[in-house]
Image (cartoon, rainbow, N blue to C red):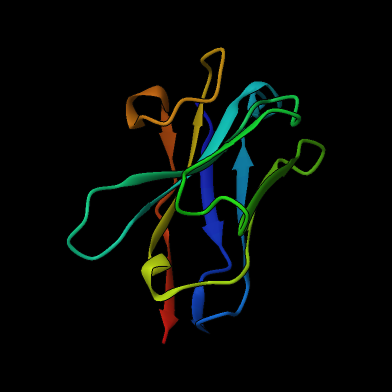
Amino acid sequence: QVQLVESGGGLVQAGGSLRLSCAASGRTFSRSVMAWFRQGPGKEREFVAGIYWIGTVTRYGDSVKGRFTISRDNAKNTLYLQMNSLKSQDTAVYYCAAGFRQGVYITMDAYESWGQGTQVTVSS
C-alpha cells in the first residue's frame, strides 16, 4: 500500500489560488494512478482530477476543467493540485488517493489508499 498525507489547504477568497500537495510513502508510488477527490458539506465525495503513473495522462471532473491542474513528481513521491479561480462551490475536504488499475477512474472503488484530507474553504 501507499501511505498518503495531504497539505496546503486553507482559507482563500473567491478568485484566488491554492496548491495542494500529497506526500506519498511506499516504493510503488511511481507506478500508481493518483487522484484527488473532494467532499463538500452535505455532499458525497466526488472525483476532482486523476493522473496516470507516467504523468502524461490526466482526467478532470467537469466542474474543475480549465481551473485545476493535477501533476506529480515521482522523484519526490509527491502529487499536486493547482487550483485557480476558486469558487465558493470548491469548498470541501480534499482527499488524495492511490490505485493501481490500468487507467484513470473516477469512482472511489478504483483507489486503494487514501489520505486523511485537507480542508479548503473559499469565501465569497
